[in-house]
Image (cartoon, rainbow, N blue to C red; front, top):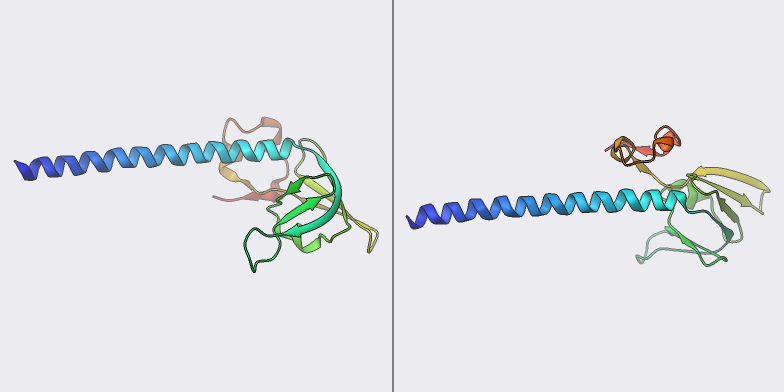
Length: 140
């Protein structure tokens, strides 16, 4: 009888924990999708005054603008191109950055954030964005 109760308890515990972790995954997914949408909607522009990484001994991952914005592009190409003194512009509800480099008088157009395919397929993802910026899509 004790063995039966122990096995039943372990089974119940496993089922409860599994449901709990599934709910955490779902909440994390929703938060990530909403953060992505919010960041695409947000416009910004300014001059790059600094680049940095929150982790020591790693190359820069974030950009600080003179407007006070700190941005985190998930396109590694942006960090390879950007230099202090460059101007950056991003339109509202667009996933492209326009970078003007004073060194070579060029404007680079690069995508800003990776968009997971599962977000594109989600019915809560804006319909008008589903087929835009396809080069920024990452497969699950």
